Amino acid sequence: MKTFLFALVGALVLTQGLLSAPSADEGPGTATILEKPLAAPAAAPTTAMQVDASIQPIVLAGSSTVGASKPHYITTATIKPRSGKGKGARLGSATRGYKVWGTGKTSTGYTQIRFLGRTGWVRSTQLKRLVVAKYTAKHSTVLRSKANGGKKLATIGRDHTLGTVDNARNKSRSRVRVQFQGKTGWVALKHVKKASPGKTVGPGTRTYPDAAWAKTVSKNISRYCPRTTVRVSHRKNEYYAQSGPRSITLSRVGHPDPNAAPVKAVALHECAHIMQFKAYPKGFSKLVRHAEKINPRRDGYGIEHLADCMSDSMGAKRSGRLANGSTYYTGYHGKCSSAQKRSAAQLIAGKRPA
Ligand SMILES: [Zn+2]
Image (cartoon, rainbow, N blue to C red; front, side, top):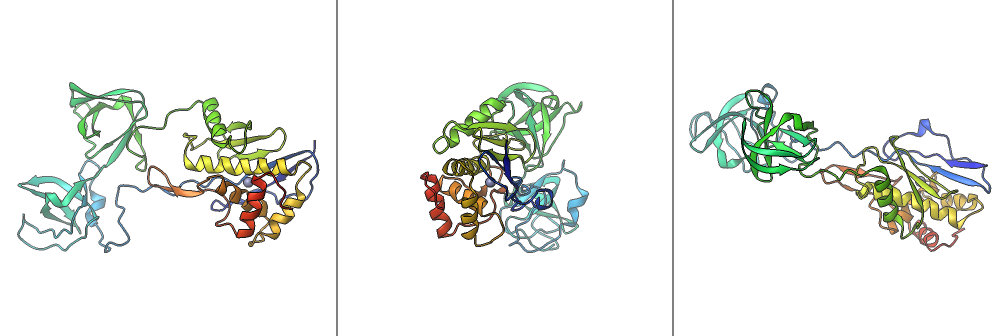
């Protein structure tokens, strides 16, 4: 069976060198559109040492010499640390939103911090404690009131990510102190695993078996692409649409939640290709030429821009922010021209723009 492929460049992740150019060879038969990798979410914000660009650049010389067991704070007001509690030498100032390490000492409403390589005191009300480490529950576990047991404070569900402001351990190092829904308590280390700093504190994504993941994706595109088989790939960044049998293949690597916006956006982009296939069942060289003609970039990926424009009007959110605060981007290039939008609308209506 004759197959033609469209191999694509990445918008953010450049894979141009790895993929072949769009094939001119085309005819009745099957078509497969291979996709560029879905751009990985931008690095998630870390709680450690990330400072707003708007804040004056002060180097925290003390930051590298303290461990995660020391308290980490963000300032809630402008601080003017002094060598003593409300008296002594002034060490400088830092604005609200600045992150500092504490020494662990507090006294009568004051907290001792490391500031520009020195030790100083600020009002405790001007600081808010930050999470210094995160843990995800491997299975359902119990939050206990004491380091070596105590009473049960809460049940923590499997996959829930917990934050800790001190990462304190008990003597036998079998438990860690964490915060959970406003409570502070202890969990067994054997029931949790260390999580990355960018992970969102809170319940985890429901663990979907592949079949359920595919079914959910299929449901999310059914309005435009009913009865389209969704195949789950376990290869990173594998996304494509196939004309016969009509199916789409999506990688779920890094995308555990089938309802996450980037997954929906990619699924709708692939659904757009299915609609292109439907409108041009005998091969769409005409559409490819038309798409390139109305592609302001003239980069050979007009058909892809068109699929993006179609996905836009089907409700795809091609860029945005994830629950953990990181940003994502899917698709090829930015905005769609009015000509591209017009052609996209025709294709969605089952008509041929060319
Ligand atoms: Zn595509």
